[in-house]
Amino acid sequence: MSVSNLQIRKDGRLRHFLSTEGLNRGLLTEILDTAESFAGVTEQSVKKVPLLRGKTIVNLFFEASTRTRTTFELAAKRLSADVLNINIGASATVKGETLLDTLRNLQAMHVDMFVVRHADSGTAHFIARHVLPHVSVINAGDGRHAHPTQAMLDMFTIRREKGADFGRLSVAIVGDIANSRVARSQIHALNLLNTGDVRIIAPRTLIPSHIESLGVRVFHDLREGLRDADVVIMLRLQRERMKGTVIPSEHEYYQLYGLTEEKLSMARPDITVMHPGPINRGVEMDSQVADGPRSVILQQVTYGIAVRMAVMSMAMQQKHSQDGDA
Ligand code: NCD
Image 1 (cartoon, protein in one colour):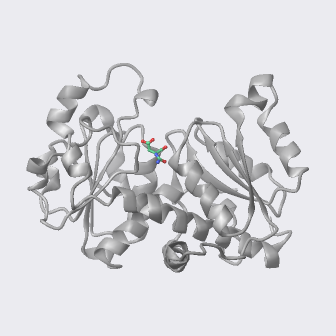
Image 2: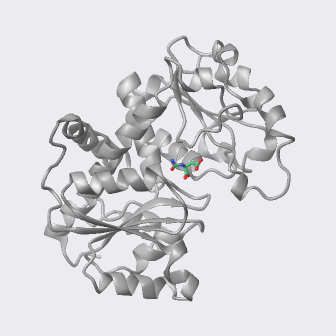
């Protein structure tokens, strides 16, 4: 079964959320619109809606995470679901239990949704292929492959900052594209939303081959690539995924690709500066920029809750009317 069929129900609604690739503009817009209504809920003093009352959601994290796991947990709680956090690195797999046995045991406890993070690309898809028909799977990051809720919270941030017409925007993604699941999910989402100009800025060693086939423009010079950009998304150097030496030194990388006020002056004066976190200050960006007036890095974290609420409620809502529709 293809990726898109696995994610989308026969009637076109969301079943799992595994990657932005293979989705369509209508579904992405529905996620953004639904998140917009939840953003209001999270700003109230009583931050809860009863949409997922009685549902059980398991955060199944095989890889360390702070903000992603926490915002998924808060999103589930604000939807009134019961949520369980399982750090598998510290439990079952070290005892030799297979992934499928772990899943079967959790399903025996009547779980309704798995939120999965794993160091291996394809894990969320694998799990989605094996869950019971009523269970939904959300990918919270798999290897270098995809991190679709991060991409959608980034699209939500861009829409809030720049308006809904992506067609007139120039968006630059800077840094370790080769090792980034975030970049891949962002590029597919930006393309589906018909973004006018998507740019990749990075040294040759951090750009995957054939990236141009995704319809992006490639730059190796940060100043040149930032010219007249509306939005810049900085990425962390994913050292844990690098094989061998692909960058000379962090100092040299910062000289060439670190975002400073001076380099930012090449872009539009109202440029929006983003980063999925965690930031390496003084490596991919200067503190002055990270904490400056054009940075929306903390808003991204806040919006992450509303976007995750949207994705979870959309995938679960269909469950009521679509039980048995695998
Ligand atoms: C990203 C991730 O884990 O892929 N971070 C995140 O979800 N907040 C990016 C990164 O680790 O650099």
